[in-house]
Length: 189
Image 1 (spheres, rainbow, N blue to C red):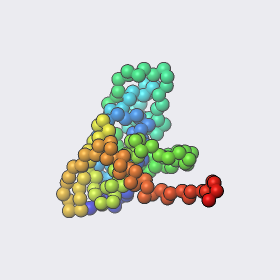
Image 2 (cartoon, rainbow, N blue to C red):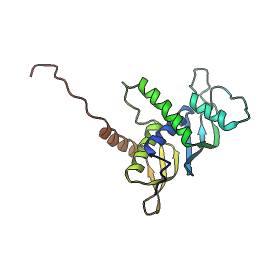
Image 3 (cartoon, helix red, strand yellow):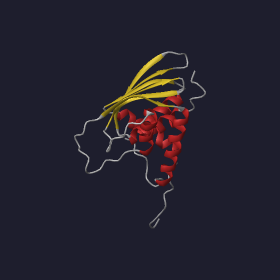
Image 4 (cartoon, rainbow, N blue to C red):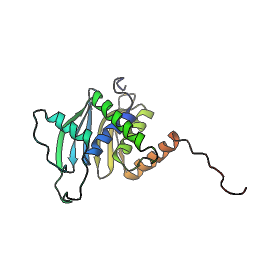
């Protein structure tokens, strides 16, 4: 039932999560439409205002790709900004995947953060792939992820994953994809 053009959700959702992490997203809704992922939500205000440009989509996507970092001078009580209609096309996802792979190569020695948005979305994507579900929508608020999905028979259902459920599922999947390192003997046997 899943469109062949979408590919696997595990990598796609991880890449989108990395893009949303760059914006320091606090809450979002993601809808799937014709192999595009459309996101609306609330993010922390960027450290500097982006000058208005004719192509708003390009400037906003540029903000995701280049990311924003908090500085000590940024007010902790700054108001969040709301965004709607951020569209991730297959080529946008591919670009985010390449950027994520480059960053992963630099940080190979440290394990991934199971509480990060990208890892939560990766976990959700692996679940969707495992059961061959088709994603309809995701809503993320206060760490809880609500997922609307279609099964192979076309029946829609909704799952609500708490932060604890996401973490437990992440640990289970991480153990399956990472071989355990060999234990080296250090003392007398």
